[in-house]
Image 1 (cartoon, chains in turn cyan, brown):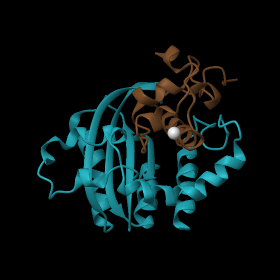
Image 2 (cartoon, rainbow over the protein chains, first blue to last red; image 1 turned 90 degrees about the vertical axis):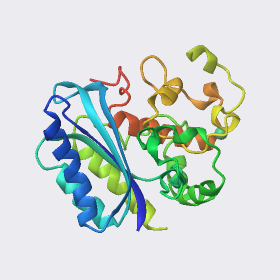
Image 3 (cartoon, rainbow over the protein chains, first blue to last red; image 1 turned 120 degrees about the horizontal axis):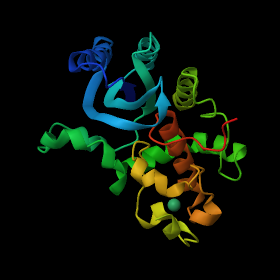
Image 4 (cartoon, each protein chain N blue to C red; image 1 turned 30 degrees about the vertical axis):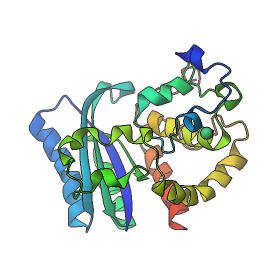
Length: 177
Length: 76
Ligand SMILES: [Zn+2]
């Protein structure tokens, strides 16, 4: 079991019930496959930096959950069915897990908890992150001495397949640890 | 805002003790791309190698998820 973070975009122009069922389908898949949801953050409707399927806005949701690699591939398959999900991305969760710890009393403002992860000094998880990162870093280092635009990950932006391949690459690297 | 970034001597993330970068934090990430959406090299931003690497990963994720635009001149 690892902790993952999955963010996806659905069409905001459909009715609330449709959005709810599209978001609900994801949480159900996570739960039905032995996952444990730590946080659901509906960022809601945002402007897209570039149009996707002719839409200029997207409805964003992020789930943080514990699960197996199998859950990820099940989710991926679901995301790739039809055109309901404009984009999706799953990464190994990198933020502060304590934010989602139910034993901490302040769970009321969950909605805003996911985003500002970056501002807090992180002692504990830094070490872990460092370890997890080292492999990845070596590869990137070779690939991009100038630290600019190393091609592989994002260059084919319009193909939905790109997300998928980027995802699985990340997980493979990670699973080797 | 972008002018602030010119010739910084120190890594923004080290200075601000930011160890974890969130690709969804578009407001932070956009400080590190130029007007065309291209990632500012670290010789200009002053970021350390480690944080620049994390930054490029985050910016690429942000582009994939339409939080940020791809480089505007890279389209053919
Ligand atoms: Zn740094």
